[in-house]
Length: 578
Image 1 (tube, rainbow, N blue to C red):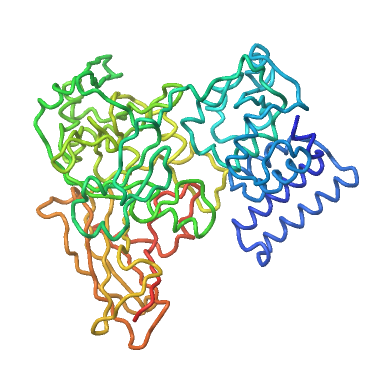
Image 2 (image 1 turned 135 degrees about the vertical axis):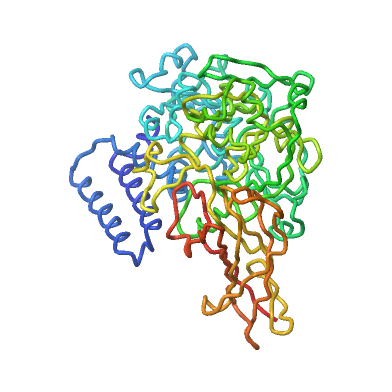
């Protein structure tokens, strides 16, 4: 393999051992001061010396360490590998190792490598025969890497063929780290007649809707963005254009005249297809509910240790009035009775990956059938038809539950004894112990997130801002919310390290709502005293308390998890005063 030509097994293994240990030491503590980090480094150096003296040269752990390196980050590994590649094969890269230059490498014929036909490549589609893929004009043997890849099932779909169409969708692969690592697995060139013309393939992102420029993107493909936190406290109901966007796949184009919603009851065998006109015949139900991404405030958790995921701030959340048909009404017409609550309701979207696999999720049937659960098949948002980013023409709204279960562009509903088998239900949006890492995680051991925990966030002032002290006080504003229908009963704010706490004023909350049906956030404000002459940095902290007397944990370190979800520690901003 190309990787073994540019680095001997000993040096390759040492490089990966060094990198993995370095990353782990950073994750677990300071690499220079943490004894655990030092131990890892010492072991890496000892391991290298053993290899220099003729120790075990098994390459089995190479792919394991490689996978660990990719999962945990990749920047140091990428730098070292790319430097070695450029030294040994300077024709592969341009003078600057930019992303464009690295992409170009995969469209460059390597004259030092053999040529393969697609007929030869297609035979290598299983571990027993070796797993080969093509990307651009390159042929890559990824047999050793696949078992260690967190998305190995998706990788195998491309085995013996081109991965280009998949990477049109999964844009997170188009980084210097991933592309550099892929090049190390290159074994040859694809015969020109067999090269997949990816430039001629349909671009799944070409019809994306226009968005308001106030939204700050975390990624563009798929589009994921949040507004500035300060705009959230301007209105109890978040304007549609300012509502955060969380997409996992390209936004589908749906013709309302041809739209169909499939319903299936696996228990009875009954199935039915709804047109949009059939859905709007049901009694209209409106619920005001907050939708929050499971990764909201992940960037604060990232300050503790690295995390795989989008670096959301505190604005991956919004509150809106949703209108549509109650799900329980629709399910009753499918033969589901109120007492028949054992099982799940699965939802599938019309957004799909290259294998036509849709985004999917599920909720307990008991939640869906409870009229007090207020689950609706929404077709309006704040009195307007859903826009494309928010699920046009129909999405499910599951109040009090993590945003990932509120499936957009709804195409199918299944009443089942089982949870959704979707990746996003089974292998994502779950939380684990802070000590669980990607080597030890077992997604089957944790339940899928449903109700969200109590949280609050300071929206103004922002960290780094210089605030004006008026009459000895600074005005602080934010939101607070608790999942499962719990009411926010108090928000406490401090600016002196917790010596004294100010009880904030709940400016706007749901009114006239019965217990257990508080689906909306509360907007709050507080006048926080600042000592005369105090310039900063001043740390302002908030914590919320709900009607079950649940409160926020003090530290993100105590709730850190490898996916960075359910991040609800104290909200903290550091400001200066004038």
